[in-house]
Length: 295
Image (cartoon, rainbow, N blue to C red; front, side):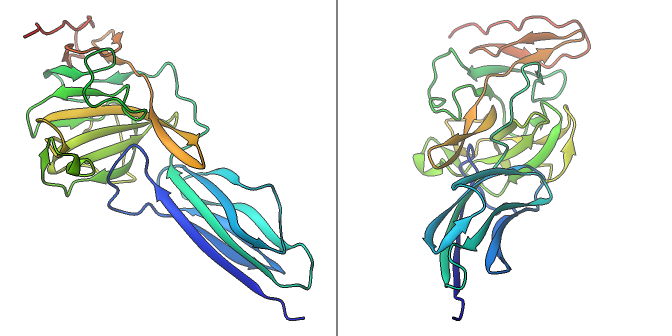
């Protein structure tokens, strides 16, 4: 009997925590013939780990090497055999369709509780925190932003990396900003992956205001862009958030995680608060940031 092998690959890409992903991340899942069946292989050609969920939406005369769905983490610049598909009854035709969802990040990563972050602007500058956990939240009311902070900041202010890492995604082409829901997906940003698997996002950057490229390694204090007012915003500011990838429903999602800044030498470590006047001073002993006077 002539063997019939029919397959379909359907891949959905999500870059959670960021509304706009202009360039597709270099990740794929493909089926490669192997004897009477196929090997389903994930290939990651990007600078960050990728989490993938794979299952079969159609399965006729199919046996798999492990139970479905398969969840896996594919390391940067590598490939991974996800599952082997073989006929349950040899000699008969088989048919299957795959469905996979992937997200940039490692859903198994555990944030380092010792990690601290320098302020994301140049030494000697001071800015007020206009949104932070515990304050009168106006837009930070979702899982991916509940621990985010906003710094009121003039446009074209240099923004620096708050922690060492690898740039995994940027957007610089957006030009407009306003308090308009239609602009939610229109912010410019830089996303940086840290050693513990967390990702920092620096958002609302100026048009053309990105100074780094995906795959570039940066140190804390490196200029990565210029602040702006792109996307959904009521005015110029820098949105800063640290996130972690988690499994959710039949895929993945980014959730924000608490973090701490440090200032001074020796450092003073603090959790950001609404109305903190944060000064990037790293040459004198660190002190608790004062609160701006209420208006």
